[in-house]
Image (cartoon, rainbow, N blue to C red; front, side):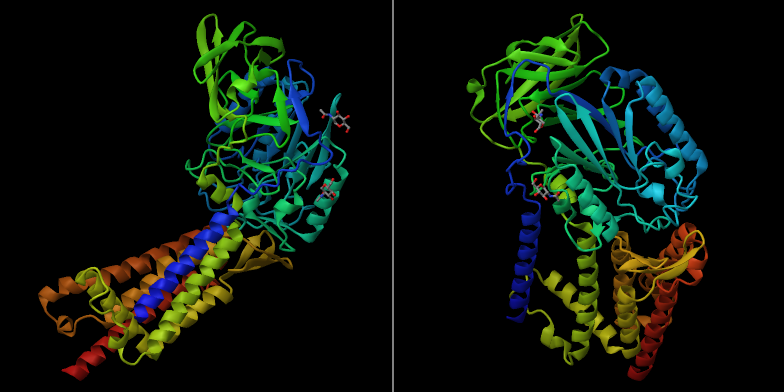
Length: 635
Ligand SMILES: *[C@@H]1O[C@H](CO)[C@@H](O)[C@H](O)[C@H]1NC(C)=O
Ligand SMILES: *[C@@H]1O[C@H](CO)[C@@H](O)[C@H](O)[C@H]1NC(C)=O
């Protein structure tokens, strides 16, 4: 009965948790009221007014040690491809340089990398009529930068904007038909510690105030875009406010930072409740991807492209079924942009594989074709453009659309990664693990008769599973009853949650103290998501396996403890090897990870990692001697 109640409670809380997450990543409750300052009825015809476009680049990672082709390819791109697109401006959303040593663990700003980046910008502008270049910093550009005004902040000297706009800024792009504002949000920490504990964006009160002011200053523009390095799900704010609320008047937020999440999420797009789209862009570093964004009569459409793939094709009307316009849209023409090296193209348009006709070139990349939207007013359809040059098909592009308001949902993986709050999630998971660990041990210690909580026969599906669970409950109970080991394990786990992990020079010339809840350096506390991730890692790779192994040692069959040749091999496999593996792995982490990133001080003054080795060995020693003592008693 008890077990039944416990499982029911567990399942219920799990459902509540899933429901909670589902609610956060739901895109159906979007506030669809367009901004009052934007016109809310748009009619697309064949004219080429009110149309312009720009390009986004992100995570270039110019590196002194790795892949010299990153800047070389970018220069090639600027020379041969970009002039065909001829964007009115370029936004670059951070991680301009790599700032990592060859070993990938140490980090610092290198002047060679910055000079390399500066050269790329100069050449790109030279080949593209001095195109406006709006760059800002990413976390890599802030590794080991003690202060915004420090000499080590090379962004100030070598980037395009850094001299005038070292942090967040507003740029308004003026056209004949309206003003378009770009708010650059710099959320890099100041001071900027070395990696790895410099992963999340953080906005202090000062920056929030500045961003609010910039948002206000942009209120007379026809549209406002925000761009920054970090997705909103990886930004901590000093006043715990929601950064998506801060941006609520934006149409789109462009960012980078997560690359493609190891290739798992190449399409990281979503739409927040405020109506704002958030579009993360894969990197230049490994994927050589850039983005062309077209603004056609205040409706946004975009295409993410690999740099040598040509021509770029973007439909601006009808809109992609995932990215409907917040405005009411009517139209007499299909509109698409084809950025091509050749003047002599034929662009044929199909809907649901039925030919609609050949689109007419208006001017520049714009092609239009009259259509009857009434014919497609129900359900989802697919529009396809086939681009031919001298009868050779050089490009095909298909995308879904709907005119009845059916929206194609974003993939769950994209919504999860962009709509949750990862610093908060990491915190909850870490404390959950710590609390369960301690509570289970304490409850078992209070239990005098272990049989009273062991599983009974009827409820369990198989005797094997029941016996397995009962055996492990018994072993952990043995640990909880061994006072010294119990106290050591509990206090070491609580220490993870409250005590300093290490003391080290986290920024040149400044000693910092790392806690799970933040890095304390130069009088500032920098919260991060990675500290919790490392905390979870520590629990899963050390504290929990150690508990199980010590339990195993304590419950090791007495008869097997007697010295005998045969039994030695059993002991070797079951007692020694797991312990040696645990300690070796921990020693590897102790000797490599933090010392490489923050210097040897992090190892010597590192109670968590270095301490783990001693805690592990001591617990094992206690368990062994306890075991042989009780063996002595029973014989
Ligand atoms: C931009 O706003 C101005 C002033 O409100 C308006 O006259 C103009 O038509 C708008 N432009 C577009 C493309 O909506
Ligand atoms: C957003 O726009 C509305 C209406 O123009 C304005 O009242 C509000 O202050 C703006 N919010 C921010 C954060 O700029």
